[in-house]
Image (cartoon, rainbow, N blue to C red; front, side):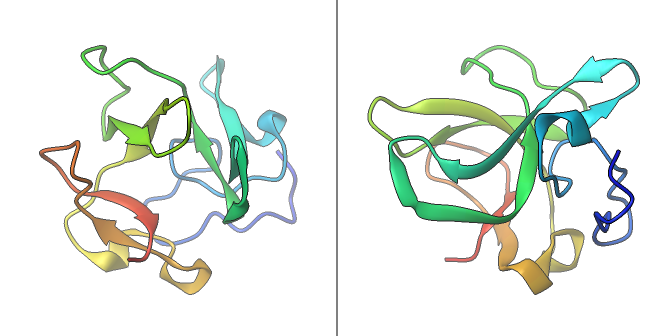
Length: 114
């Protein structure tokens, strides 16, 4: 894990879903490899500030506890696990993330502010 990466708000463990990252190696925790996404595939104008640790998923397949599978609006769509939340303070607000309820989900996740 790169020591220069701030773990973000309270509760963000380095390498976990929703944590900041610069490379996928920053997203390794508990011997589980995750992916660092810094921009949406096929839509390079949509940048994820500070990167976002995630795992790819299918709707209907479980994500790790504390995260849920969300459709990222690309073509073709990408399915990724995103950190669940109930209030903005659980997200990386200083980097532009807030607690939002995507239309494809029944729970709110930390994603770019609307």
